[in-house]
Length: 107
Image (tube, rainbow, N blue to C red; front, top):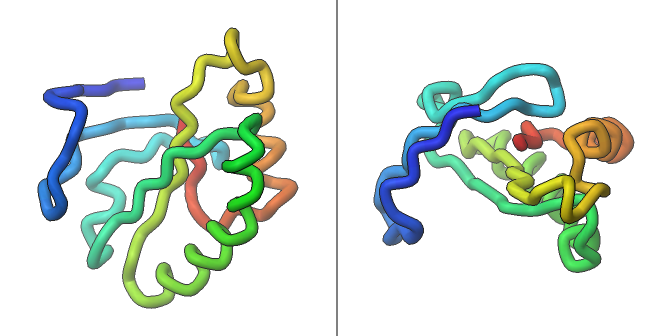
């Protein structure tokens, strides 16, 4: 996993910082995987949070609608599995498969 954090807040329209993150589908994704997309929607989510869980179906619906219109989407779980065992990579894989995430779920 590789991250370069230049700053913590981006302004609307700014380019996203480089990332290279493992996904639940076994691939490693970076920004270059989405250069053919008009925009990239990045959703920070997790497995354990009841608010995040409440939006899982909606996120799937959003992905299906907007990915067909040329928008890319990724979900990123940035939680520490030691603090939140439900957010382990293995459980992310299970959740992604169970819900049929139509977008890469990155860790």
